[in-house]
Image 1 (cartoon, rainbow over the protein chains, first blue to last red):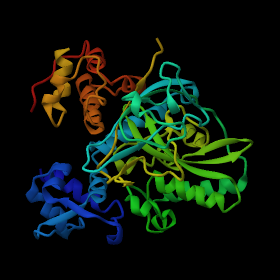
Image 2 (image 1 turned 90 degrees about the vertical axis):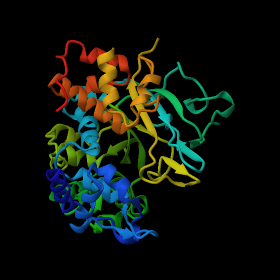
Image 3 (image 1 turned 45 degrees about the vertical axis):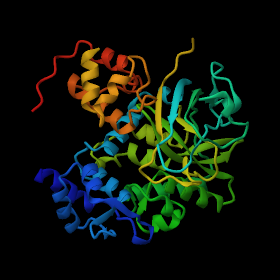
Image 4 (image 1 turned 180 degrees about the vertical axis):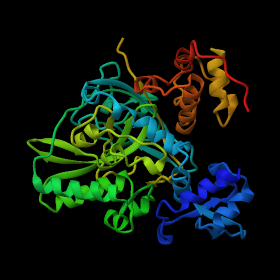
Length: 339
Length: 80
């Protein structure tokens, strides 16, 4: 058990802790210990080693959930759920390039988290390039709803219930021509590779200020997508940050940037590029897929299902506000074979 | 199918959930969360003694799919 604790303590130094003004110290010691799979008593040692915490109303320490995720992620063993999920979901990057683009049919199921307040979840953007609803599941906005009377109207961004949708995702190999956009891209990806900015989980409140998060040395896919979009927009190029699901073993919340060029939207996925060029080593796995990393500058992949929404907005709302980081929608993804 | 159910049960926070899931039901749609799915996939890799391919991972969404994957795998060693 000491070894496990030592590993977690090592992880403390590998990411940038959530600044206090963006932190929510509301996770109890018992919940934190359960999440990190250490005995409650050993959490005290981790706190003493530098894991940020604040006293709760009862005097017991409270922790920030995002910090806990990052501790687990950077423990170095490659066995935590975040580490394993990233490893499994990006396994396709090591496959032949043709498999990144060929049309793939998916069945996606979305189950809402159980919360005290009303929950809403974004619907797939079936009008996006490379996305097509399959005819087996017709319906408003292409979303098969749990009950017909609660069907979404065309153009709706949210539904208040789980749904099932079958879609065909088609990728395409593209490159960015504009040298100024390429310079922005290169700077962001090289900064991640240098380690000056750490790829880690960032709280939703800080994600809203991507340049600040970047200057603080922390970024996740949402920060990078918004940062790229803001910097490319400053060049006068039409651009947008997108958010949706990376499909594979499960569906995982993911964000990327798109830029309009040659009459089409081209994708820029800075986190994929970073991870595919060895950036996952501190997360316990090494992926060396330079061709895939290169393709991330312009290409669209058949694993990304964008959702309707502006500026990579949160996928799940509770009481009209972004859901807390632990309240994720359950998203299943599996190959779909038409009858 | 029992081998697959045993493996899945071992990775659920609420093991009794497995008894309410049909062989062809979608695991996530039945209440299995993504963290549990990830641990089930890792359990399959450990049982088979090899890394799962991307295609195998994407198919791992039902009890039957887990059973098909584990067919022919060596018997599990006792937990240590």
